[in-house]
Image (tube, rainbow, N blue to C red):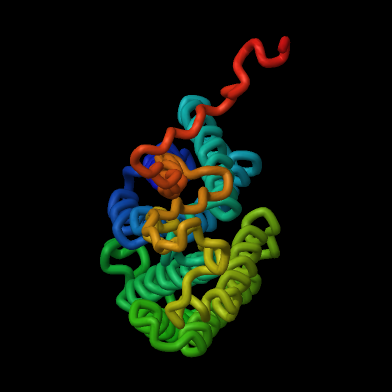
Length: 357
């Protein structure tokens, strides 16, 4: 669901840029600027978020896309509310696309919360804190690459835009921000290497924290340079400040103990571990047993297995063993020849009339 919404975010992002009445697509350098922003601009946040979702990092992927798309929509809302409209016809489809973008952003936020609270927790699955740190790592990487590209393009005189920026001078504070972007990019590459190899939790957390700090320093330098020429504009600057704080918090989550357990190879705390384990009991087997009979002889019988508590599916208790063989009672000795046989039981020797005599 997360990567489906990210695909919709990509489509809405392109439609908002095409329909934006304040940035015409055609004109002097407009088409070149569109291609440059499409290939080397903010669209890479969406691509990276989609890749993370495909790699079963729904929390990280949705976070990266949301951290970009929220402020992007906010800037468009501010321009629509306070900007000067070009014409009535140009602003008919743009508000509708903006409403659709806001709806998709709310849905993406809901998917992010659902994955964060009750996402998949299979064996070896990374914890939420690790995925949030990965979101900070991916976001800072994309931001640093875009910042360095823009800086290199500016230092070269904006050749992709023709002669538009040929006379632009770059202040020293902006050059310092490019240096911060370069340090952030190097730290991010090191963090990715350590993360892929699971070498050291402390090194990963340290590199990621340093990357986020240098990236925030670059943002601060850009804001300071902007405030030299313009007044503070909360609707346009506050979303960027909020995103910077969130990214720093996500980066600091790399110091959590669950992240260290993942580096150590231990199962995630969200995986069922340490609980009772159900083991199939062995099937009961009848055992031969020696029993002494009443006549003093030894007999071999098969003892029945004890039935399981509550019974077992598919198990029928063995039949009870056959009773012990009983010895016949000793017969009376035979009478000698010529002697009369003993009278049968109940025989009256006096005869029926003896009582009447």
